[in-house]
Image (cartoon, rainbow, N blue to C red; front, top):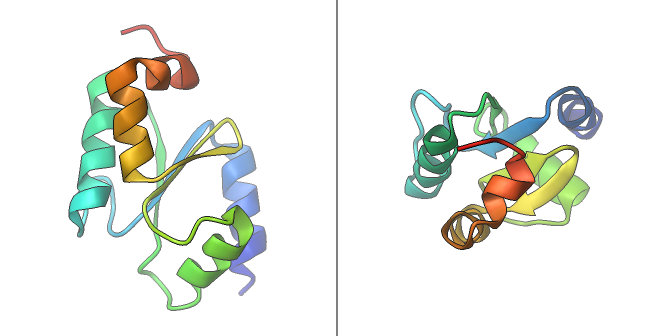
Length: 103
């Protein structure tokens, strides 16, 4: 499997994608759970990808994004960052603008 190409396609086909440990219904790490909570706060629909599904997924995504840790939040094809950046953007109002939703 070519996860890098698969990830590119997922990012292109979905406005908001969260590459995370676990799923949005069952996150398996606190950082992923935090980002899911923030996104749920805005009521946005987002696609989740469990990077624990195969051992080659995390290295492929890290190479594609240039970001070594997870979760990774992509909006409109662009990497916003991980948990810390998502929370910071949420707290200062930038995430609302990036998600382009009315809250």
